[in-house]
Image (cartoon, rainbow, N blue to C red):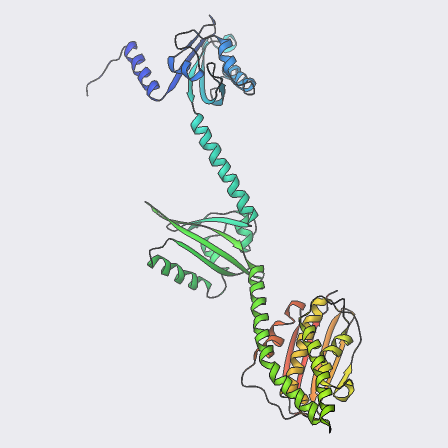
Length: 459
């Protein structure tokens, strides 16, 4: 191979070409003579006269006053024989010609004469480069990231990223918290998926396949999780595929929607209960009308009894939906709910026994709804559907505010378990008392319907 021999002038010319192409200025400070030499590019960066001389005072004068102490300290470290620092440093200049603030990146290296304790710095040489656009770009990115973090924090969201090929997932304390892991855990994709509720992984995979088949890249879905302690959680999953030359990445956000889901389920329960109550209204009114008229010899007496019972029924139905009572009592609640089913004398159709005590509004509404449903069914099918039928309603409350209430029907038509549980039955047994650490059970004996309710009364 042919060897090239470059003289000093050739090296200097090539260096000048390279530095000019990179827009890098050169500077040299001779500490022996005090002379400073700036290349043309270095003078342009600082706003100096391209044909004029540069002094140390001029170099210090264009350095931003807030940055001068730091840059001067770094130069002193570089020229200290015991330290000989050479790290680059970025600082601001105030251009000499237009007082314009620019960001520059400087690099300097000292030259020493002698060795050991006799060593002394004789020259400090380096480069200077205008990096204002790069700095502004970094500031914009940092500002965007800060806004993104603020938005994610405000939305209680976690950002995640999965490398499909490697099977790895990014980690963050927020992501771990949403999925039931300790903040410092580093779970794998499989460990995250292990927290999916049964059937959710298959559903999400099917949904993703359908989206990809349509040529789309974005997916949004609600995902049900089961935390290690058994707590059910709902999260909203938003994801987008990012193709790369070495494989695919999927990025997205995750945020908790558990309370929203519970609110939606409660709204649906209320809507279904309302439809159920409307469906029963005519049957109940028909039964009350029949009993009222049949029980009186004179039509006007029957009409008066019917009118009174309708007023009581309206009051009882209203009490089922009210949640703003001022601490109603158990006895008062029972009286209001059962009033439509007797002519002012509850003992004619009901045997009532139990202690009286105030109830929180939410619990009172729940208990009223359950009693109203039991009474409605008794009027339609059970003991209150015929003369002579009776209902025994007994309750106790222990020292820990644990309520045990029984509803027992006797003297009514024969009853048998229904072929399938209606909405009212499911609502009583499965939904109403769960928030109060309680439950309700219904049984159908030859004597009549029996219901037992157990729940904790909130303080």
